[in-house]
Image (cartoon, rainbow, N blue to C red; front, side):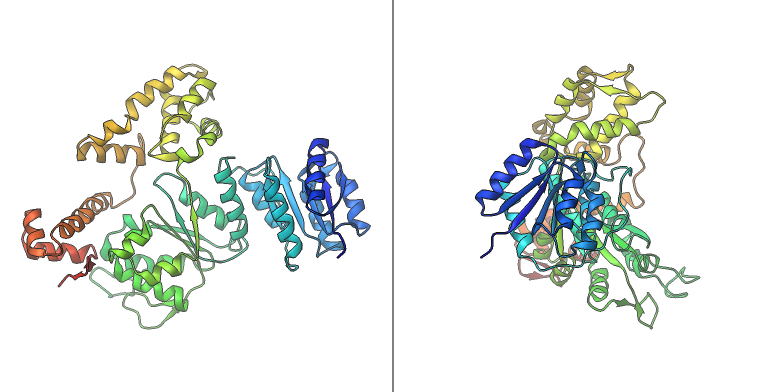
Length: 474
């Protein structure tokens, strides 16, 4: 079998040497160059079965070469390396037709595995589109876990697959959804976001699917639903775990058949939207509790994408803080001491990126001087972020207060329907736990709660608790 040749382009001699040695040991011939012109010469002469190139070269940009390579060698796979390891770099690599993007520094075993996959893969159609140079970063972070997300997003922007984004509150799930839309196939269509937890249960179906005039009391004219608003674009269903079971059934039909009927309507309406869902809850656990349809779960979870909490990517905190400082209110931009950044990196951040952003805003406004000091950070953390063991011993009211403070920050406005949402978040697990403690005996559970059985049965139906520990709610 003929030995395959790999072309390596990088202006760093040390990197060229390391890659040449690793690829040679893996059984490949290697030809290296330090420039874009040198790489183009090798490619145009028909050399190489695969290209490994840096983005930034002394005489050009690696991305600029990709369309030219496609024109003369459409079957030649290209692996892009870059120390500018941002979400835009990953997306640009995918958009320009690169087989894979590897952020520097990378593991040599990962490189060899990528080369093997690229050489074994069948040729694929690749379409170059306009680049993203100069655009502001939609996501911030260079940690390994964020690099994994960037590469996953880059692949998903080239498809219409349904995506479910999971992650704790404040991690940036909607930002991820917006990137999938803004850089995806439906970028020219609308992006419509709807928060399931912020809509009263009795209005969810009308909100999503619209209603006809006279469909219910108060429906004096036809109402346009979110599916119709998102036609040709992306519909982002946030807090999907809070969707009532009746609406789940309607949504399942949309995913299965691509059509729905409005409330009070008879004719089927066809829809062409991409669904991206998000939740901070464990959907499989909700499935086991009878609160979420299992068939809908698998329809939504075609591609799961987990956004890590901030404590799992503490190395991203300096970049995030500097980004938030640039966006902070006020005429004078501030810097931050390295000691202050180290202090921030040691926190657990239960409110995640949202909590960090709120803290930076407070520091910018409330603390004078051009530089934010470690003392200023310590003072704010002491007021706003008690130790976890202290929080565990707090009253329920105090914990709710802290939860709201983390979620909305100082001066922030919560979404509509907050009262019902908070009651539901407390009431649902309370009912479930009491029913479980009573082994499904509704009379005993009602006694534990201090309410009558009819009230309990009504609330179980309101929260969709139809099946718990094998006991059907009658």
